[in-house]
Amino acid sequence: MIAPPNKRSMTLPAAHTPDRSAPTANQQGALPPGVSPTAGPPPIEVHDMTVAYHRKPVLWDIDLVVPPGKLVGIVGPNGAGKSTLIKAILGLVPLASGKVEIFGRPYAQQRHLVGYVPQRETVDWDFPVTAFDVVLMGTYGRLGWFLRPNARERQRAAEVLEQVGMSAYADRQIRQLSGGQQQRVFLARALAQDAQIYFMDEPFSGVDAATEQAIVELLQTLRSTGKTVLVVHHELQTVRQYFDHVILLNMRLVAAGPTSTTFTTENLQTTYGGRLTILDQAAEALRRGEGAP
Image 1 (cartoon, rainbow, N blue to C red):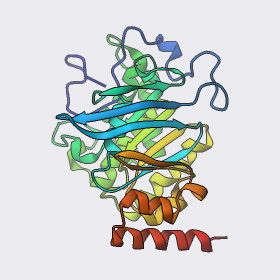
Image 2 (tube, rainbow, N blue to C red):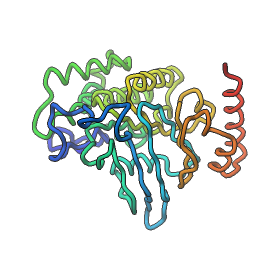
Image 3 (cartoon, one colour):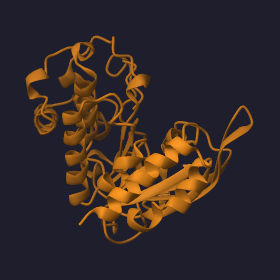
Image 4 (cartoon, rainbow, N blue to C red):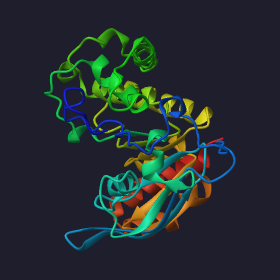
């Protein structure tokens, strides 16, 4: 969220700015009236989305519906527009055309339902702030502009730090943490938002195997509680293992649906354009999936 003066001025891309049309604090984190994780409008609908940088399209005519309670991998080659898709849905880059709806309403009215973990490379890690302070920022969306975090918000921050295994580092300066530890802290901040939809941009990038496994388990836990999670992902070998739904993207939407029926050799050839190294990885991933019990 964009920081108000003296409170959120660090350059961490945080949870989203509460606006004056958003629901009141006691509604934050709750679904819109009449909407449940298994009924009503889908969590995310994208209609005719086109995004252009300097008049050059980077996403073209995207139509997409994301079902509820799914762990969704966004997969495609470098420059395919994967991160741009997330940013466009979140209103962080302008649309040339099209619209986005979150649970059937414009995103601006629903931003309190959304959590976002950006790429680590976009963060200024030299800002003098502790891990606990970063996580506490995740609670600001429920407070509005003028309220300060109280004991309840601080307790929530402590709980999610514990959930990601970072309680021992709560008072550590964020710049002193390893890449994997920083990623865990950002995941904790997203959890502190108590969102219904989570967007994660390359959360496995630059982390060790233990952290990757911990993140996967956390994402699976979110899914089991009815949350919808979208993850930009590069490692084709683990797509079948990690995700039950996949979006294949290369400027245009190639395919979207259950991983078991969408993550196919034909769709991957269309997505990656016959890049041999990538397709060898995909073939290996498919063989592993076919050999799984």
